[in-house]
Image 1: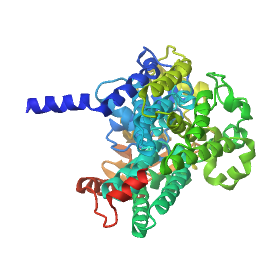
Image 2: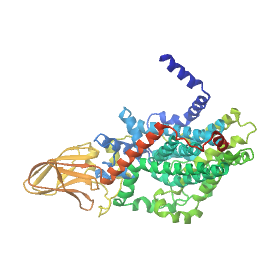
Image 3: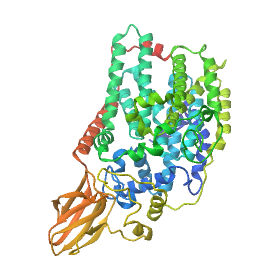
Image 4: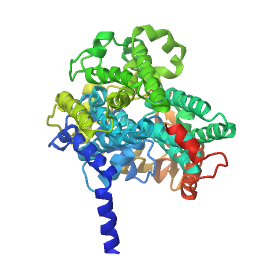
Length: 592
């Protein structure tokens, strides 16, 4: 047995594909190295959000929530249903590392590093298939890591959810490309899981990329139609399988998507899409797309951003170089290059003010993207692919030396962009509350907020002092309340009342909160300008509890996701479905 394992390990190490795996890791190391330094770059845009969100996610997990929805320490301790609207996958990944012993900062940095590395692997898989050249794929993979917007997301914005979402576009394209060749159930499941991964990582990125995915599916259909005219059923089968993959992906992600669709109406969105976050204020100028400026400031209005939103001079030059590969390219490879060139042109136009009418057409959905420059993630993907395609312009595209030279150029030229601003910072509940009060961050409103957004709460001083929180009070003088226990999803208290009394919890009301009095169901209601939970109790001594539980729509969503995951697993386990019209010759023609 030991000998067999040793032989298997040796064959893996010596396999030609393993060399590229090690090269990807080696060339990623300069970009990953700053993550190994002590401390954290907490001044990055969303750095503190990532830590505090994970801290609250962990609090809910430890309070028994298998799929957290409630962030108990937001809004000065009143809480907010953050994971009703925020995709959960990055937090599950971070929580996994925290549960095995890493602190919150280390857990966030590990997820960041893995996201960068696996995005490179995903790009390698797709480019190797689409370009039929592993050297070109290697260039595309490293270009994807070092393209400026990717490094902005990592070290300037610290936008962890976007970083995780970088993994999935090339993985989705790879899976659908495989599906176009095989029409196999296993590849249907892979495509579904990849698209579900994007949906569960960052909903805005999913909104941005879904039309691009749709265009790519049309592209694949055209390719199949061009090369497989004799196999009408062949094309039809791919159409059905691609549609099935999309539906299965929606089913897998239903646990997040259905609550977003049905429960977002209970949240006020004006603060998320109005004022500073109005997308109309955040189009770019042409100069910004080509400026080498690199800063660590925040987004501005009307092109006055204090950080880089460039396409990157080297990626653009290599994209132009990809034009030279067109005469040398064969069918599908040439078509892919043209497709991604058109995508880059479309994205450049989409971030300029000239695109305002187009954005207005879809304002109801696209407004939640907030910043038009977020679509630069698409150009990052397309430019990285084109960097790989440029290798095919060489006389000997199979020669590894030119590819390595291009990679070294990428790494050396963009290495200065891998330097975050490290600084000392403390991350605890007191620091979080200081951040909320000082920066007016980690706030959110429900429709039961009838007054002004609060400036603080009675809990702030207790957080700052490290005291046990008084999570519930009596609004009547003839009753007293003692907080017994509280967690990320629940509060338990002891009430002593000489007469019927009103008990107010310092927790925002939202569908899903349930109360019990002496283990019997108890009605609750929103109360006051802040929409806090109010319960009415009879005279006597009672144990009162509130807990955030699943609503019927969340239960249905969890059931749909569970069934969908089982279906995906079954499809993978059973392997490929046989197609009478899928021949070896047809597959080879499409790849070429």
